[in-house]
Amino acid sequence: MKVLDLQCCHGHPFEGWFASEDDFLEQKGRSLVQCPVCGDAQVVKKLSAPRLNLSGARSAPTDQAPASGNAVALAKPQDADALAAWLEMSRKLVAHTTDVGSQFAEEARKIHYGEAPERAIRGQASAKETRELLDEGIAVLPLLLPDGAKGTLQ
Ligand SMILES: [Zn+2]
Image 1 (cartoon, rainbow, N blue to C red):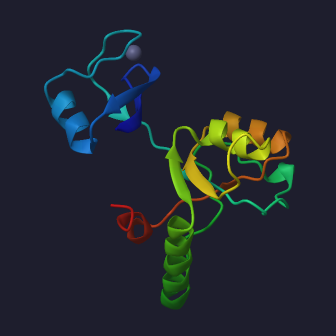
Image 2: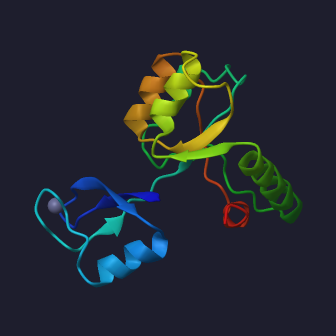
């Protein structure tokens, strides 16, 4: 099951549950995916940067909370060596974190309060959720993963 953050052409955000990405595209193609608020079928996936919660990394100062949902903590290096190193690091992050998707904020909170096993997770969170987590002293790190790192997820 795949949970997608969707948005209609009027900007209403909502979640859609699909068997797969292809299932979403197929249903969208047949105008079966509609906004629950206005019924609009011009639905697009919302862009959101994957975020990381690294257990143990508790030093993120709250004044570095991103201002927007698409804030990126890592600039894309131009240098080829730096790019390779960055890709390598991103792959390691992907390999050592559990993807909790849109459940990120909820799961990060559960881990912080000892209601879920301590582990590093990644997923999507809005700017508001990120700020709330940081306010509660939960370390989160906004991160845009390169395509090469995401590819290892499949
Ligand atoms: Zn709508």
